[in-house]
Length: 114
Image (cartoon, rainbow, N blue to C red):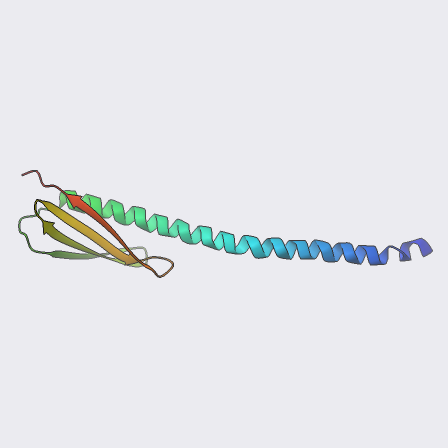
């Protein structure tokens, strides 16, 4: 019986070390996981907006040289698209605020084959 009392301090120290290791690991993994999910959403928005802009540049009937404006939504993000004529190309630029609340812009050019 007397022998077990000598190990009480060791068990307490072992529990504290295990607990502190779990805390340190969780405090490092949670911000990394948050950063990964934020970047994943930013890449999703870029991909969807880029695809939308590409498809509409090709399918849109450009008949005049005026500036055209369009707005659409990707999930909860509002995207503004401006089409301008820069001879001999049409330029389409999409701008939006990403998950980090920073402004992003993607521009594509289209050469009409009339």
